[in-house]
Image (cartoon, rainbow, N blue to C red; front, side, top):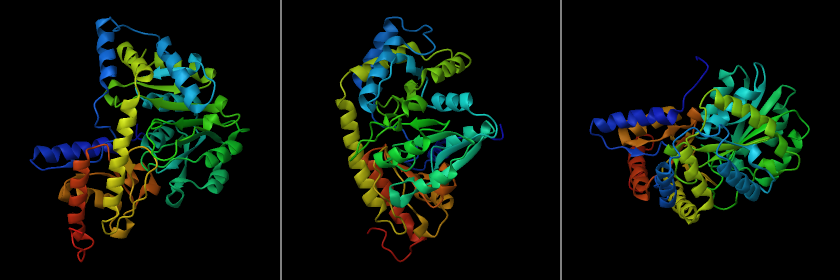
Length: 389
């Protein structure tokens, strides 16, 4: 247990709530959760499923109708051919991380993963006694890998490569060119790729690609996706993995030993999400784009901040080295003195130091209020700059 970590966003949320109990105002930009309601047609499908009696155990791998819908969606959007036998439905996205690593890793195996990246990956690698091999994401390349370093860090002990695109915390999207080069390096190796595509529908200029679409990679890739982000269903706990059949057998065994099955009525809602109207997704992404443009413009007006435009997800990841403050100290200062809850980039790996993560999954009004508070607080590290610039 000493090797396992936590997700810092929830720790910061607890601190922010404690301040609010003391009567202090806090702008919440720490949690990666869409502030939109779950679309009505999905909610109605969930209610109807309860009324119809979808309250009992279901198949461990997931309801056949949902797995068929997911297989059709993945085949269409990733331009690959998969069937329901390749789909495992699980309660949220994290079980696919958890089960994939447990199924594949032994002590001493090496896992290449992005840094900064979602912290649960490194936590699980260390928990299982494997060796984490971080690849720093390069700010100047849109927070993508240095492919030369990626090539150099591949070894005979590499058992898994983890990719996250669009990415948390950076908002970066891996280009098709980079994915093709990675595939060429991995195609003939005994390596499994865990491709975290939970933000696959939340992008702004260029649709993200999947390494599973590259020649020879479908049979060695686990695609992680789900409903939490795309359909604002975080509390429904509904995710899935698409993987080779032999891997699906392992995930089903782990599901039997842990969760038995995913709640049946939420799966019925998932069918409605995939097969129902999609304008709700387009509208949400359009609003995220407005918020992205506003927060990046605002952050770039703050002395010592430098923020690139994220290509996907809903996070701004400014470089704050120009403030002269350590990012952890700056995040604490903004929370306790300015009333703005954000995350220290170091929470996402050592290469996240000197960055902060702001979630813009909150209203434009709150974003503007947060930017104003940070600007006023900047007198601490830039005393000669007007706070109302």
